[in-house]
Image 1 (tube, chains in turn brown, orange):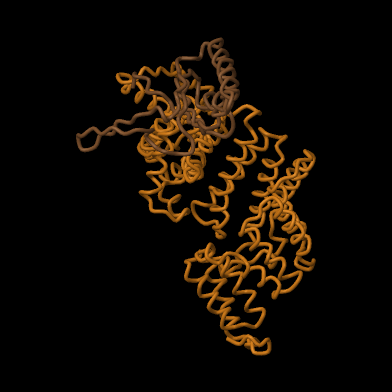
Image 2 (cartoon, chains in turn brown, yellow):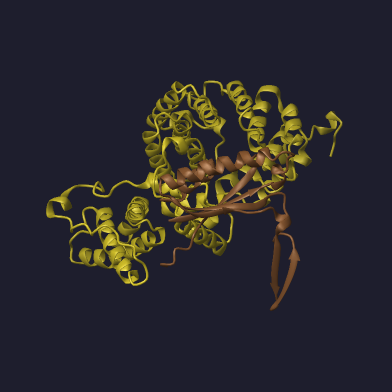
Length: 117
Length: 426
């Protein structure tokens, strides 16, 4: 099965002067992704720029409205995701537990629609 | 005759058959449906054989399992148009020799795997116990709804959602590896605790719940056997045995509940108590204390009593409750502890502790009002005691408890009011 690991973190954690926290987490993500690649489990993924770059298209009653900012304002923001192959939920959860985070945060694990059902 | 045989077989072996089907086909709905169809087929086939003077199958469970397996394969074939799921090739029909083998040994015991599925942390907590009772213990949706005081459609919805989550999120049909045990075993034990509390509440042990208490003995035995180095598992298995050992003494001849301290220990089932002691000792040897070991120790203190001539172990019980509070400081533990405080330090101190508890959270909790009523009555505050009994009675207790409360209320009503001496006349 494929699972998406959706990463929610407080993006301000990376806003330090010299960008050290950012460089560190990138290095950790590279190592994490390399391990997934080596095991043949990585199917995709991306890191996202911070929510101050987000624009949301909201459609209501057939009308589209644009607004500046993410879908939902919250303490933790969607910051990126991995798409991985895992035998079952427990295996996906095990990867989610090991996923690099700068501090507190959440990883939402969602099975991917596989197109055959 | 065939009907009751079928009911009994479904009740006794249903969990095991459904677990084996679920493990083989990795599909809870399919397992349930196939089992239901097998029961339907049995209702017809067995009544025919008994009408002709022949008996129903020697081993009803094996019969149900093999028919359910075939039905499941048929259903999958029908569904095959839509999915690519290909199960193992069907097992050949049992040979004459296999059919002779007694009991359900042909059915692999997959109940433990099924328990871990039902109690997976990915399943909503309020659905775990219900799902376990439905699939592993074979209770009907209606019975579970009644036990949890929720409307049947609500409970049915909860079960459907939980099963869908398990199927769609890809929850594995496996006993997790040791690295996951601390988290997973905790979830299983707290689910089984909830499930067992429901079986235990039924002091009469009448009807369905009697069989389900027996299931709990089986399940905890399986769990303890598989995880012999997990002291909390062993302790919970011990606790269920201590509690079940006292079942014959929980009601008097008139069907009224008998409180633990007034139960005749000679009626308790000693073999179960010995089994419990063995398990609790094994848990202690692991040298990792925990709340369930303390709870089991409280039961053990009571079950050490050989007859009503021996004093009740109140001070030991109180010390154990004090220790338990360091693990589990919740209001129910404090309420139970207060009962021991009343015996050791007197009802006035116990009442002070009970009244310190959050009475809002306990508004609809019968035992809270029953404990308060008893303490008030012992302090001679008759008017307050009577209204506390009335609160407890208004919360629709089980018949055995109701008649006990009514008896205590009647005693309180005829006792002299001494509150005036204490200056708190009502």
